[in-house]
Length: 277
Ligand SMILES: Nc1ncnc2c1ncn2[C@@H]1O[C@H](COP(=O)(O)OP(=O)(O)O)[C@@H](O)[C@H]1O
Ligand SMILES: [Mg+2]
Image (cartoon, rainbow, N blue to C red; front, side, top):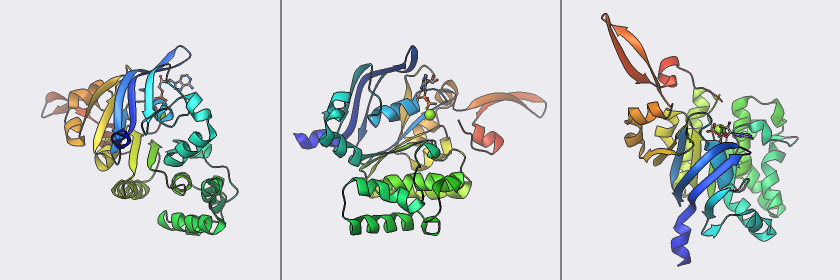
């Protein structure tokens, strides 16, 4: 029955997590299917980044449990070097802040770092680096230091460094925050292509347009750090009350023809920009 377990990439049961006395997740149960495109939607502070860190085994629940690939994910389990290595190879995390992820002297070295640590042969490393730079359109930046690049370029390098490991599961934290529309479009297409190729893609965002473009399923975290709603993008995005209560849209009064109306707006529709943390 190992195969049935393997259909679920993650399974969370009643997960609680607090930073000292500050609650970040308050009893979340959810699962992620293999090959699924799941978007975690929620306002600032709702617990999205905490959830991704839990899925990546960077932090562990105070209460409740997380299973990954059918095995319980705990600090003790990941203390086993073999298990940690296999987990890190299967799950890749793209941080919200690219500067926290980039440390190499050149883009090429950055992308080579993961494959080198997997212990791949030199030629295989070179092949992976070349392929990844090509897919990401980063060849012209290969010899540049990552810390001198623009925000969008850094984000692509961070993603490239994760893709070079060829993980089964990609966790992305607000991948489009602060990016220009062209780079956002590129990322949306790339994430969908990765999912088509069989990868599981879990993305945290508060951008409803991004959510609509890259999700099979949306899970909404409320400001109470609990599940506020869940469904397909059309279901969730049509639920204006859920979006209002979760602070993903806001409404304000307007006057049309001398009459006052109230109806919900997303920040994106209102102000024509994508907001950042
Ligand atoms: N390192 C931390 N120390 C204390 N509180 C934190 C820390 N990181 C996050 N929090 C708090 O936990 C809650 C969830 O945060 P986070 O997971 O970052 O939410 P999101 O990613 O949805 O904005 C917030 O109330 C936030 O202030
Ligand atoms: Mg966050």
